Image (cartoon, rainbow, N blue to C red; front, side, top):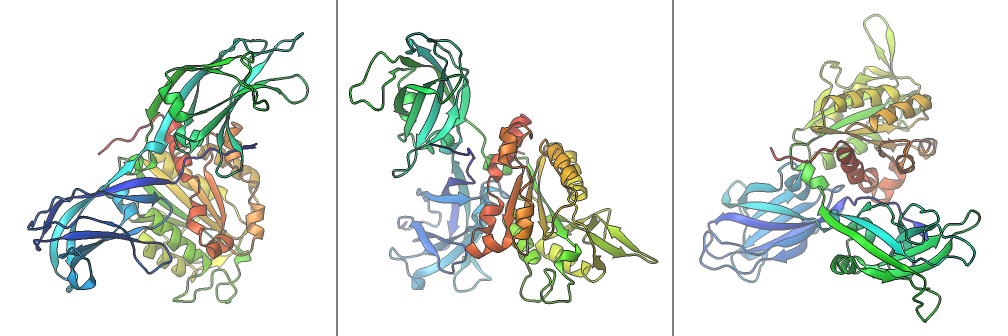
Length: 515
């Protein structure tokens, strides 16, 4: 049985509905479609019924869409004036990004319906509402007791419990929680614990949950006393049930192995990532670009900094791809952009720089959107020389100071793009330890060959957070070359972001507040 890493998913289900509809056609029907990434064809999600003789139809239908934080999800509404939709009877359309609806626009947008024949004209307006279905955000608190647990004839029993969820197919079970050991007790009461319904049963209330009661030994493996097989739905409905432990290897159920009692069960909704992003919390973006000599001189085609329009190099592609995703949730288009590991030409000398603003403005390093960052980056290549070594500390310190100044109201995502091996490993770890207490996540993108990626694996991960060395995990490490080729670059780059974000605000005891 494997231990499953518990993470809050970066996906959730969204219910889309419409209101305040005003159109110029008396008869109407809406077809809602989405265009998956890297595809040019729209795929229908659903359609409304055909509404007759109304310039202000009250559409009652809603549509479910899987929201994925790490993607740009384009949604289109096509308006038709006949019951059987076709290109000939389409009179208007609306397109929007699901991420912008749920983040930047706080779950509601009011838009004009564009004339299908003349894009300069409008044929109506409507409001689009997005509502998150929060079943996966259930926090469950349980307290378990044992009664008359079986012990060895001439010994005592040191019981503990393991909770596991059944995996799909015939893959067995995955461990999701283990209690403490209660020494020498046949009637133990274990400490209460909290677990998310996503971790416990993938939010499937009828998914099997295995509870195993073990006797901890001084030496060797613990002895299995007995098991209980149940579901979350059963636990919710049984009202503090008592369960008889059974031997899973025997067909006849013994009743003398002892009992497990669920003495307390409470459930509560917790705040989701979208609750925060649509509230008073702003998301900010910072970029760090590696200008060390290992990238190769920019005028050489094999250089990682070689500029060859209209093609993007790996630095440009990373900036565009990741920032376009994050921009769906930012309140402004400002992006702080820095370079590191360079030498800068001043009036009379050349100065080594561990950190400098790409736009050359030390008082205001922010650029206007993705295009502003790309422009500052390409311009900097004309006056900045490649140098070294690769140091993360100055950039992480700078980003940490930005996030610290926000006082919880701004969460910073630092995208650090590099090709080299660190020389400040110990100080980087110390700075990351401090940063784990601040509202910041760091995405480290390794460009070039895989050597950089392998050299970065010493960086703190979820394991450090679980062991208590860090307040929480705040780092994602991704290889551009491998992930981009497989088409899951953004998914890997933002893997676990919801967990990092929500754990910070839980530690800080902050909740979202609507402005």
